[in-house]
Amino acid sequence: MHRSIHVIIGAISGLFFASKFYLIPLCLIMGSVGGYVPDFDLGFGHRKSLHNLFSVLVGTIGLYLLLNLFPLSLLHDDVWSLTLSFTAGWLLHIFCDSLTKRGVFVFWPFSNRAYGLRIFRSDSLASTATGFIIAFILLLAWLICSGALELLIKYL
Ligand SMILES: [Zn+2]
Image (cartoon, protein in one colour):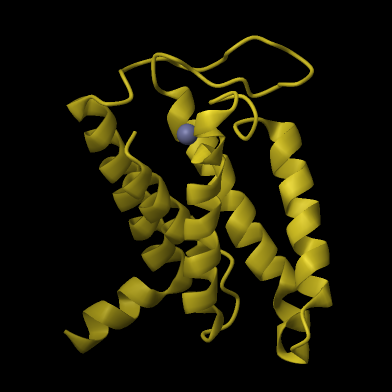
């Protein structure tokens, strides 16, 4: 799956954690970063080093601690929203990669076995189409859950 699709899916997943209106852009950014980060392992143990639950846990705790150190007191009430946006983007990246033929080493370093549904190749049209479908479903779900769709329809 193309990296830009991971970023789009991550950004949309971040929306679910925007508990306040002003958090929407911040959660979009944190979710997209979370969707981008796993492929930093391209040069070292791709689909292993940053495509596993252990790295997600370490990344989540690390980001939570880092955001708590952030000098702006403005962020302190929103650390969980921002952290979980990031984590959701990362987890969805791993899920989407698990749909590809190669799978992901989701339990690495505790297991050296790749898991996944392994439906299509990562660079295939089916992979891209599935990514956009997942993004669309997530966006629609967020629009419905947040009440934004109702507002949109009301003002159209
Ligand atoms: Zn990946």
